[in-house]
Image (cartoon, rainbow, N blue to C red; front, side, top):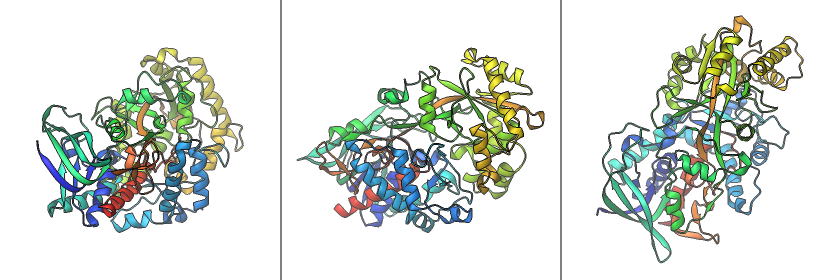
Length: 552
């Protein structure tokens, strides 16, 4: 059995693990990283991400005339999170610390590492309730120039530099099955060595065991991600407040995001909290070119599409595209159907549709200014969106409403769609467009959104009749629940130390990233403001890496 010795063991090489490793190496420590996947997956889920980051009162915001402040961001975060449990003690503290980080040091720290940002700030989770309710009061979604790979790159480079000079050991295909505990102190881990795999990034790899291993370490950091790739665990932890779990879902993360380190960590004394808090999207579509099983892509919608449930009834205020992810999920689960619909025009799709993920945004990921101008400002849908329109199983494109409805009804589950209800909803909405004033809250919000330069430039179409032939063709998109993030996890203090059932530190054990609910066991509470998942990995990885290094 191969045995390894190190100062710090990092389990999981996603963004949080890479950041923790880079911080520990900068402090002069030796680090060993283990992961169950082949090395092609270095960077984990973050590599696949859109690279959205939550900043407060950034230069990008100020240049666009956005007046943000720490006080406003705190109001939004806590109104969104809804902390209401005894277990929220440390999540609350992590939220306060993260807000300070997002307001002060985060952007400058990343800029020093060469990370840049797209100048247009996005407005995710717009809310639509009252000032103290869920949602972002102002746009705060900053897109990394280079998307997920761009945010991973400096930390990967630091880790690989440490590997080159012998301070970092990277062990792919090493699956941890147990943490080693001696006299109440975690002293490392043991597990299986899996057979070498040539699987491409994100693709499923074999679980054939060829050996076992052990690593001894003065400190161990668990940064192994969440449960989004494991539908059985998602359904097991699905909360009653979100209705019944869907019978069918698409998957927004690779299969290796399986939650396997949660019971391993609990067996070593770590306390798992807020497992019923989770973040899944309702704008998922089946990937026409899948990488992992049931691969789904999320539409990052602008606010104009008409959102109908499976029967054709329009969703209630304020459940418009991009306004309240979990509110919409709870509403749709109450309908008894696993899908819903967007109905829109060509004019809307070419202005408003962006697909989440680094591979779906070659202009931003490749830092290609010419392609960016063509795809975001030119005529027609972007290349990736057009590919889904041409090949995607969930897209219906027709020249008139009768044919569109017939195409919707022809898709699986379309038999429950009421054609007359669809017609009623779309035609009624269109009648509201002719005046500057309206009782339709979504149309009022569209006009309000276009007062923001970012929305007017690249995110929100000029309000128009969807059935106007000049705006066509008509488009319908069948939407699925798409699994994504765990909002709960290993409870940690503000040093990233894992805590036990009595609130005491589990000596030698730390946690970071999604495995710790992005900090504290659930920094987001019940809901996320977006741009906070990658940021939570950065912050919690940095905290854990520095604290573990200081303790060794």
